[in-house]
Image (cartoon, rainbow, N blue to C red; front, side):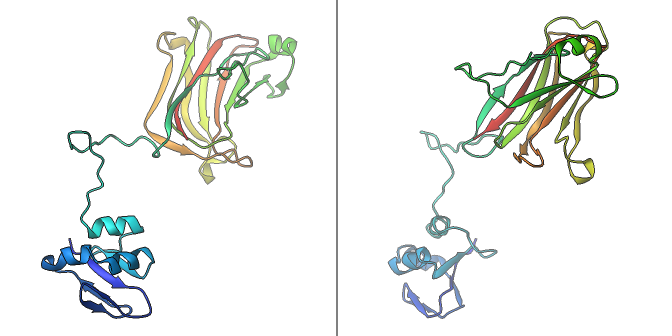
Length: 256
């Protein structure tokens, strides 16, 4: 690959005995590369954005990358034996795997459990209950008799990359308890939202030891937005009136 130096200043500059006029460039020959690599004037001008290193196809971005390219420095991470270190990329550099698993029950007001290790509520989830007319129910008495839909929302106030999730039950489900999982439900599908990730799975057919597991194989970046709720994930559970089912919704994700 070629090593080309472009003069991006308004005056001429001399490097390793070669003058480069403004807006002109010079292709370094292999026999003289060492002299250019050790030219204090060139290194100073790269740093002060007067000279630009080009690889023969495009400009090299970033001052340190330009100097590394000029000096043919390999920046590949290596182990103590000098072997290159590689891994499948899962998320942004510096982000950490994070598993969070809220617990709640259908038709059961105040059933949410989602706390930090210190016992503080994390305030990342909301649960609502509805009757057959889609009217929200707010008391336990009305949920006991009329609740046919339990809606769970997961919406942390930070960006994350989700890679998968699991919905688990405690015991064998004997009723028709069907589940839908929708990403970004507050934005219409025509605008990129309302992505259905789980479509009407009936828990009656799922062994409690298995649960419903959704693994996207790759991560999806979810950006928090207080107006459009672009990192919200919604679980809709439809069930017989007043039916109570203990559930755990586990999210596998990466976060800063």
